[in-house]
Structure formats: C-alpha cells, structure tokens
Amino acid sequence: MVSCRTSGALFSAAGNQLVYSGRCKLMSVHLFNQTEAHATNSPGNGAGVLAVTLYDNTAASGTVLGKFMVNACSSLEMDFHGAQCHNGLFVAFDTDPHGSGGSASLGGITVNFH
Image (cartoon, rainbow, N blue to C red; front, side):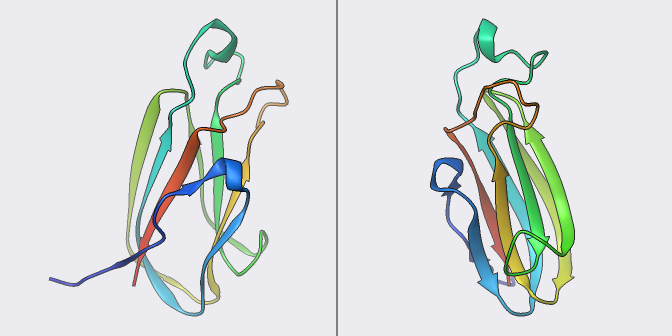
C-alpha cells in the first residue's frame, strides 16, 4: 500500500495556506463545514457556505485543481487519483462566496498527496 502525506486540518479562519511546494501527486481532499445551520445560514442565501479553491501553485493563482462549496453542517470528499501537480499545492478560502455577509469560520480542508 502506498503511503501519503497530509496537510492536516487547515481551517478557513487561519486564511489561505501553502500546503506543499514542488512536484507531487494529489490523492484526495476532505472538506468540512461545522458552521451552525440556522435560518440566517441557509443554503438559499449563501450564508455559512465554505468555498475553497485548490491551486497547482505556491500562491492563489495558476492552474485550478478544484473549486468546492460546502454548506453548513456538511462535509465533502473528493478523490483525485494521483493527479500530477507541477508547482505545489495552495489552498485559498473565500469566506463569503455569495457576498451575503456570512462566513464559514468553522470550516476547513485536509489535503492528501505524495
């Protein structure tokens, strides 16, 4: 069995983060949003949504590997099957993707690669 490196949990409250610099293979991502779901954070108004963009780069630019949106009290897993990354892995959080004044400060992502 092939082992993987992990970023560990990267929280949106900490802001954008460099996961790795250099060539690697992206195996999977796991996203979670623990923001409380209530009337002001319903999926319909966009509040409480966690939005994450994953780049093949060392900054928030370059090739987009994936854009993810996770509603309050939800999680998401995505398998990338060892996709080749040439420059690195960078995570960018958008804490208010719909301009609704809400944020998903209790969300994050774990990136698995080798």
